[in-house]
Image 1: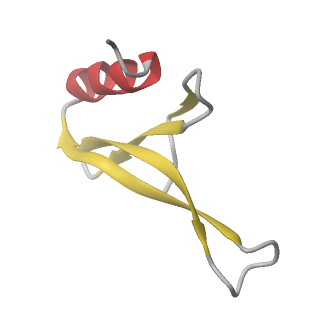
Image 2: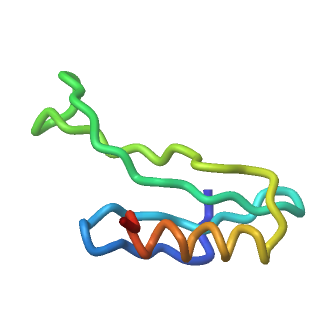
Length: 70
């Protein structure tokens, strides 16, 4: 997975914009407990949405980076 852009929001949650065979996706970095990893925390990238156009993916990434709006 080769990201075009990786950025984080104010809470420290990291998001990435990734191309995939002509479409784009937005992925979030997740931290989960894993006993087989040194330190016990494994970092993985999980998709928020896939199969988007570049404009839609940029808009979603911008919304994710702004954080929760109340």
